[in-house]
Length: 190
Ligand code: IMP
Ligand code: MG
Image (cartoon, rainbow, N blue to C red; front, side, top):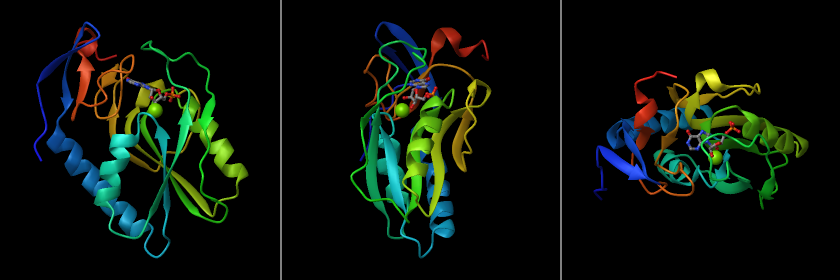
């Protein structure tokens, strides 16, 4: 399958340019999939995606994992339509699976402040899983305000607004097959 891979896009009237190409994404996700294969051999982990943003990353990650595994989803309230977080998180959907005693791998598109991830970690811990780890496609290293241990990070990025591959700007741009960065902020490094 070949996807639409423009170098630049306009989303909600703002210009974005490619930051991580489709080839780079797939290569790195393949490496993380292989690492999960090794770490969870014989354990049948359950991958739990955080909706909406993680759905494309999770779909590709799962196909790079070759050991038996399951899937489920949490849904949290999102950023709304702004580029900065409201600082409030609400659960919109719980997992359906019984995760007590299971090896849980939580899957995020991006860790920014860490608020969403720490909120979900607390909910999951109460269900007494056998183990819990996080895998994220992106991590804004400098933006972390809430401490969360993230075992698998595909890419560390500066504190910039990014789009595509599941990540949105006011709900648009999730269908882009690469990660794009907002052009105005691209040269600033922060
Ligand atoms: P946190 O709770 O501050 O870590 O934010 C995590 C959530 O905010 C992610 O799951 C994304 O849905 C969203 N988010 C954070 N940064 C960006 C971005 O640069 N672009 C799009 N969504 C983002
Ligand atoms: Mg998200």
